Image 1 (cartoon, helix red, strand yellow):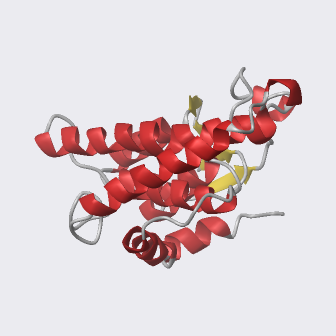
Image 2 (tube, one colour; image 1 turned 45 degrees about the horizontal axis):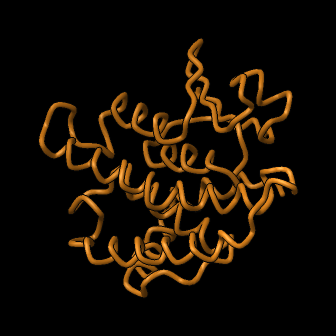
Image 3 (cartoon, helix red, strand yellow; image 1 turned 180 degrees about the vertical axis):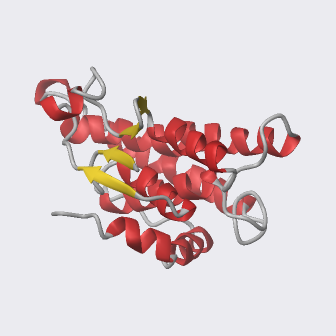
Length: 197
């Protein structure tokens, strides 16, 4: 059984959703970021971490791709052009979605108050909106990579949800409807059920 370190209201949700999609059993240790509990698994205190037997893995996207590869699902095979395209989409989402949201979070509550630059959030919101429109224009099928759900779908939907919680403007209507359809999946709902707040 896997153990996910982190709460539903963090990037750990991505890992929980992936495990649900894969039909794998897991337990949740809802350690808070930078807590002593989190530091037991990652010296930086960042979450999530994943325990797989004696292995401790960190970084949500690395964990998701590891699980997809290990279980042979939700991913194109390594060494294929399809995998290169999938990886390109993942890296784009990390740069154009996740990094923007994280920068906004740092200037909202992560940094000490004297290091925050709240005015930067307006430009980050605009940049995220442009990226969301680009992603909407790339949608060509039920999922980002075609006819099957893959790691980028989970990452994109999680980031869209994060943007809503962070008070960003709504994404392009087509992208919003697509994300809403994925939130209806049983696996998504099962992962959300781990919310202890």
